[in-house]
Amino acid sequence: MKIGFIGLGIMGSRMATNLQKHGCSLVMFNRTRAKAEPLLGPCGTFSDSAAKVADQVEILFTMLAKPDAVEEMALRANGFLNYLRPNAVWVDCSSVNPSFSKKMAAAAKTRQIHFVDAPVTGSAEVAADGKLVFWVGAEDGDLETIRSLLLCMGTKIVHVGGHGMGTSLKMVINLLMGNAMAAFAEGMALGEGLGISRKVLFDSLLGLPAVAPFLATKRNNIESGNYDPEFPLRWMQKDLHLASVSGYETDVALPVTSVTKEVYRLAIREGHAIEDFSAIYDYLTTTHQTELR
Ligand SMILES: NC(=O)c1ccc[n+]([C@@H]2O[C@H](COP(=O)([O-])OP(=O)(O)OC[C@H]3O[C@@H](n4cnc5c(N)ncnc54)[C@H](OP(=O)(O)O)[C@@H]3O)[C@@H](O)[C@H]2O)c1
Image (cartoon, rainbow, N blue to C red; front, side):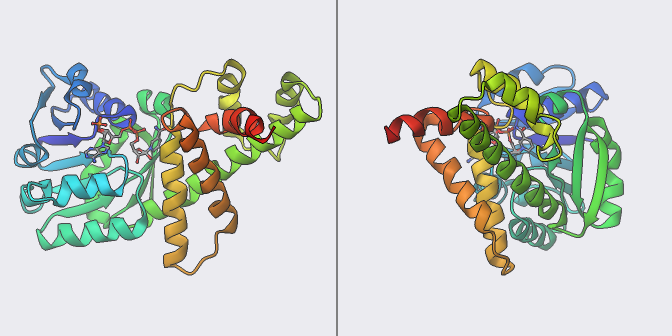
């Protein structure tokens, strides 16, 4: 079975590597070709367009930044949906909003393509270790077609429901993570402002029921001031925005998230876009505080 992979950024490159490690032969495309180079060889070829990938494969994975990127790759004049063969399966692992996933599922259906939304939870390291969690929105049969491939990249698959339900759960998870990170950074800022050392704050707060467990993995970033991206801050702001869009579409008020997403927006304006989203701490404790003096 020939498999395509489009989008070889932080996550996609690691996921594609794990498919190859399990013996899958991939046809790949990435807007920036250089990122595909380490994956080329006996189990990987590069096609110079998304359309050319689609033309050769029965299953196509996409792992792209945001809805516009997915739409551009899938639906523009030379988009891959026009080149996938009938009955091919398109698995979109990108974090996008549920209504967008439903729109892509409908566009795929008119071309007799099976669509699966399968966003993931897990950092770059978790992706490299093949331990991702997949949140799946799909018809039962389509999930069975791709289940063994997902298990090359992850250890847990949750079939949430039909199209758009995988991305629905993903929106909820990232809403929780984005708010938790920002709240923790703000708490740290206050603690330090009150004269508590950063070490005492970390030692005391991590492990408390009030603190989300994932925040322990951000201690090193904050202590070292090294915000090399595991999950880029601009994509967290994107996810909070997409959660907000989803709230609007479903008449659900998201007042806390609406404020938090603007804090991340301000951090982007201050140069933190491509740093890890834990750099929200740096924004809140450095730039913002300095601005106020
Ligand atoms: N990093 C994480 O920890 C993590 C965890 C879970 C989910 N996610 C989600 O996974 C997705 C990918 O994230 P990532 O961390 O791998 O980001 P990334 O490293 O920035 O990769 C983004 C990918 O999208 C491509 N892209 C962006 N805009 C495009 C456009 N207009 N046309 C074509 N391709 C475009 C990029 O191509 P270029 O290489 O040419 O820029 C790259 O392949 C996002 O939806 C993110 O929210 C990330």
